[in-house]
Length: 339
Image (cartoon, rainbow, N blue to C red; front, side):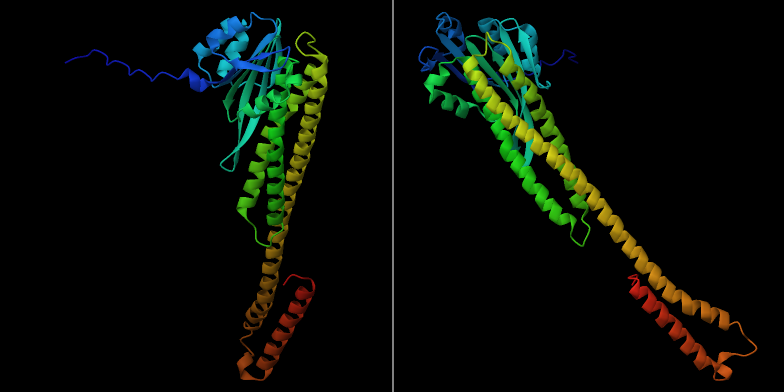
């Protein structure tokens, strides 16, 4: 009997080209796109101080990040965070570079999914690393290339374009949340109670809380970019970061407003359910009172064995009195809206 361990099946190699979305060299003199380069050519391109490199990665493996660490002299702690993902939004300074973590959101299959983008910014490079649900930053890159006079400001303008693209992608999600909230508000005031309504309200509130956790820290990051790091952020670019900060503040305010409306909607929904239950209890109590009156009279009068109702005309008077009492109770309860 062979007890030797079976060989572990080898995993298929990951195509590095699938992880490297873009690797492009630009000129800071003209803002023009020079050419697409490989990771191995980065060091050679950066020997010219008038060039900078913009690299876009999507869920890279550890070996690729190590190569970028060597090319750009990135700090090992920042590289470790970029590989692990699941980081909180933050901005950290490592020597002459910045490491920024922001959360992203994307509508997938009718649901909102969240991801992360890790950004390395140096004097002559910009590296974006996408994890999870996130759209490609190629539209932001094309927008920069269409304005070479602004791209000549360097990597800090590319950073603005990426952050502006991320914040702008939150706007349609906020509009979708607002329309969904309006539909749920209509369901709240329907006559029939729907269990799914309160469940959808809770799910929407949970997604709004997650969205707020993604947007709110962006304001602190943008405030730092507007005020500090003069060696990396050009003064001409700070105005653009202020515009992104205004958009982020507006989204944050809209999120807070909808969260308050959702809390009120959930309270109103529960109040309406309680009112509906009280109405049912009142109607049941009213009908119970109508049934209790003849039951009480019949049981009490029927115990008179000396003068049975059937032996004389008193039986007809008993029926008339019972109907009169029931009619009076019905009138009083109907007027009080218990029936």
